[in-house]
Length: 242
Image (tube, rainbow, N blue to C red; front, side, top):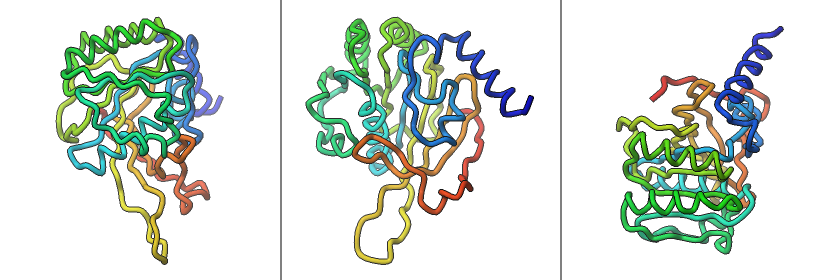
């Protein structure tokens, strides 16, 4: 048996033990280098995930669009819990998440955001629940993970303006992602190129941290491999777990 086959079998067994990938479906990214690296082949629904940008506005905007792109490929209404409503809905629409699908809950602080998320996760028909949190205790993350498993709803915690060097709290989240904007290639003529991101999987159960260079979510919520890399020389690099 090849090394790849052994790793795939091991990841499948880990996912089964952790009730990930067997009980609820996944949302693949459509990029083999990413999907093959993730247990189950994509973002697991019925589970908790974390997404962060950085204090740099461009990074936080990229993380927002990354998150919107994932939710755009789910089915059902999205509940987005935040301190106050300051998101630009047309930008979410550019990533495939139509404003009519999103219900915003202005909770005012982390405690109320957590309460709202748990209440929303009692409803299994939702396409996703997002909570914007500055801090989240291990106990709170475990409660969210359990609620997500029971409802089958994709659950995302968005850590806005989180410094890259900050030490994240312990978390029961299945994955933790960080999105950073990187320069797009020069087109050779006036115009805007498709945004390019550094997409870091900082933590994940059943697999190693990794970094990929991708092009940002399009109108269907999908990422893409930069054109210069479609020959298969995809530059992913391992990194130490945060």
